[in-house]
Image (tube, rainbow, N blue to C red; front, side, top):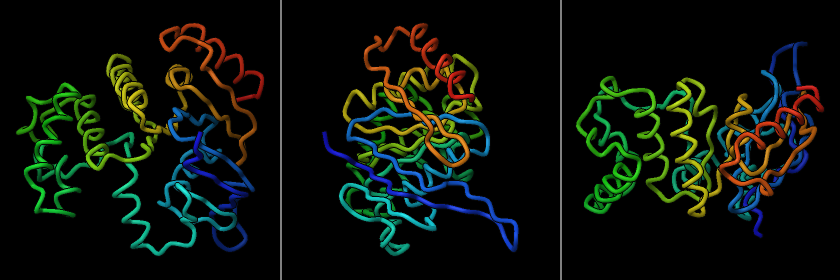
Length: 252
């Protein structure tokens, strides 16, 4: 299986003056094409920072990040921006949608800015994705006129518009109720089953238990990981038990 991301001895610190903290401390990681991987750990352990540096949203202080064969630590800001827009998708806890645009226009905005000549195909793709996500009837709604779960579905549609090789999701269910959270996880499961790599950051063991591989972080390092592929995708009880047992074992 092909490695889509290789992180080698990544260093990242934040602070000023004499107050500097290693957020990523010589961390190395590999993500395979087709992985459905989650990252867990206590607040401040570096989970989100890891996602940001692997996606080129933040720079590294040391080490290298290889994405699909390219060392992204050597790219310019414009090259990184192009790479993220064309080959990556992003889903955040709070969808970053434009308040002055309706749901449909928010979804088509990124690819439409890149290629207005393909407007018809872009709109067709957006309608297809909205129907797939169960929000096709919301296309004319403002972002203030839909629920949190519906807004997150719209964010996922936008993330999928350019057929990304990987979806990065940072606490995508963190602000949702349990029903909406499960619906979003079902969507990620389907996206991954169709071949897209998914990397998800979460603090919730019930969410992590639905991924196939979990990396546990502490103090800027990956201290352990488990694979859940031997468990049925729908056997959430056994998966959850395995995750919580591992969390106790590693002290998270």
